[in-house]
Length: 306
Image (cartoon, rainbow, N blue to C red; front, side, top):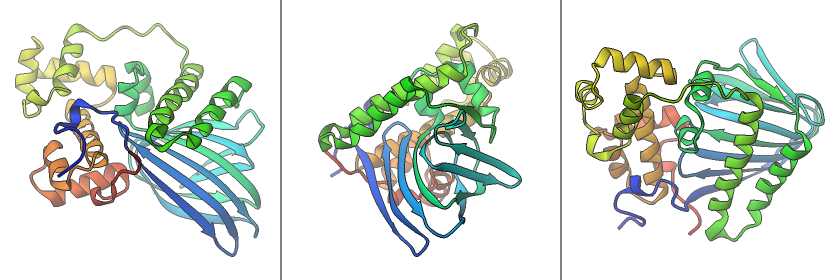
């Protein structure tokens, strides 16, 4: 029998997470990489590595998420084709907000010496649920691989320190503290980068549409049904949604429901139950869509901690 609530949509931030520690013992590099995957679409990655033989590269696929990168010691260096992203600790480019909105092949470059780095990987669903304004979400969706740089100021450094200290919390409370401190840190970064408060609030019909898209009872409603419930027509509603969020209704719904499936897996629900929650009748199609969004197959998402 699966643990947790029967309907995982009711408790999207239940205290579950996956913690993976990766010791690195190579001839040219040693250290530790810790990752924490939590409910709602938030991952943390903290690495402490020492490279001892010049420059080494680690190629791979980078999956969609907003990456908030904080270089605490040494430098961070990413390459996507001809695009270079470089951060240096204790400089005016010691942190970056990097939106990645589709899978991208790239590489991480490690330079000789010690590197300490913290990365928050935030899904659009997590950002929205945390109250991120729609115009910021839209700006991030339209800024694929376009970094926004900033310095780690003393107030930002204090928030990073508070987040790092959550790793010492007792296991039953760790995920909750990590989520809350991550919210504080992400809000500080995004408010610094996007200080404009002039954006208009969402229209009444878009607010209604969002409620429907989040309502399990309307999970199978077609666009015509949604438009009718919002006192609009499909074309107008689609255009208004695209203008506000920079994404189609279908794309938003697919991403949201896959996030619900991820939450269900973290609450020990089966892959079949998660697939049904995401609206997939075919497990293979579900697995492909899930891996495309999260970088891992659904069978690899299981919780640690109480």
